[in-house]
Length: 245
Length: 245
Image (cartoon, rainbow over all chains, first blue to last red; front, top):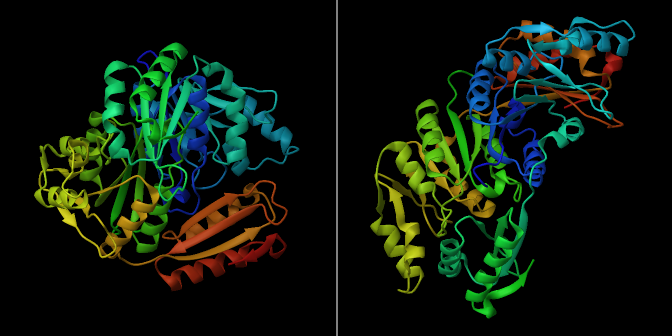
């Protein structure tokens, strides 16, 4: 990525992921979305349902990156401690938000109990981000966006935020070769020497009858990418190449 | 988990995961394996192919947790910098390991080039862990196990290490209910008050015709778990329960 690209990190909160009971799919979704938006995702961190650990991660990442997303830990149960963790990380108290409280009471037809009202608690200074498709707004505190862990809700809420992260997209090319990665190293290094800003990836595939390595080239500059792509193809022995994209 | 359980963290290295091109499956595999072995996985961290960032994570985690695993960044290409990152994190130089060098030269029938020989480089002080099923040993430096990112290799190498992490396993019970999570909160809290060492999880399922929440109960003490399970079932209105496991 370029040095000027906005940066991001995601903190995934949940013992269920660390114990392997649930596989985290939200961070891969977010990685693909941010990539398409031109935002450089720099860290994915999964932490337990522990206020102090969440607080440390929030304090660290919110200072280092432009945007921080949290996933999970925002429900009504005993192990939902994300709000408390974010608040402690920012050094602010947890307060009950009057708009959320009213929304929860309306939704519950007046019968909201304390468990449900817990979902109206926010770190002091939180903004509510409303979206057309959302029953309930997204919480934003400084540069932190607090998203739920349930994948359908995580995605719906991110979609409501999406446009505020739009920047320049990446262009992508790929070369599939029928030789091992080690045979490609000199050509990859030569291309990198000639095109130092190129993002070059090399992904071996095991037991695939079609190809052995997928080489990816990426840049935000379409013409730079095409020149680097041509440079690489010029060098590789043609019999190595299965196909290109 | 209990306070006496051994702890672990995994550092997943790879721009391809942060850019969303590849979904990380190794950390979920490791989470499940460690859980079955009685090891408490405390962090999953995904970082870019950057020596300094890997070094920081290694220095932090190797001091905090009993075992640290790395995934990825150990091939022959320009972006494989895990060995350099681990070495810097531990404050030791990178050295060529004579046994690995000999193995690589034998494998390549004497034709090993520099790219391939890079895979004989290790942080000084590294041990080689051999396994019956392994073509190439696992690298271990202090409490850090360096594993490859290709899922088939990651799994094969972990299997060769598996027995050294064996500790007491967890027992698991589950209750599926047809009511929202908020309706379960008082029963969950009462059970936790009576069984404070219980690991209690609550996982809402969206748009499932069968149930709304899966509640999990876990303990290493089978009899404690059965008493907590009975306690919870005693309190929940029977019409809430879809089924138990």
